[in-house]
Image (cartoon, rainbow, N blue to C red; front, side, top):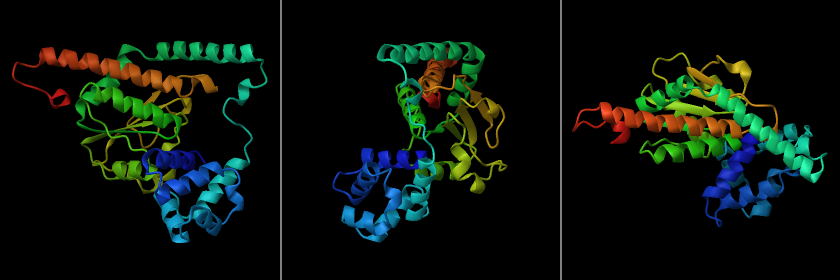
Length: 273
């Protein structure tokens, strides 16, 4: 469902409100917990489109067909947890205090992990590659977007597509001249298309994972993994990942200044050309 919800909001945020894609995405979002009881014709009728249009929409958002969308929703309906559930049994002030206390704890954990050596290693990678993609889903996508914006402010361009199929196309179509940074709290980003990614190829992109999953210190197909610590609560995700990304960009900015000083007059590196 996370993949589906991410794709639907990406459509809503990037499509014309009069388009068929917008109408379908809007309808599915509004009926996300009852759509498992609907058929493809029900959706087509409600959105004033044909069944084939609904089918094309499902493929565009990364599913084989409408039945795959329905199955994704049914799988999630078997789980009871919703975001912020861990705080709702507390009183109004206690709820606020618990969230903010966990936020402070998260910041301290990131501070301990994000040493100059760790941050400089990621900054060096960002400096070394001219072609970069930064991707994530749901809350991790917001981290990736902010990562992209912060790098852009320093003259460093990175791709950051909203739609999962476009992210996959970028990764699968890239060679060894490309750096791909995946932001994924649980580290499961690759599970949907890892079967057709040739991770042993010498021509594939250099892959970096930024995650909270402590079990993924080493993980196929990634070349470098940054395991950012966090407590298992809502407050720590995606805050810990965002803090780490911002710190990495700050160190990248410092690296740019250092390299400018080291570069002879009249010679400019592509990273800040």
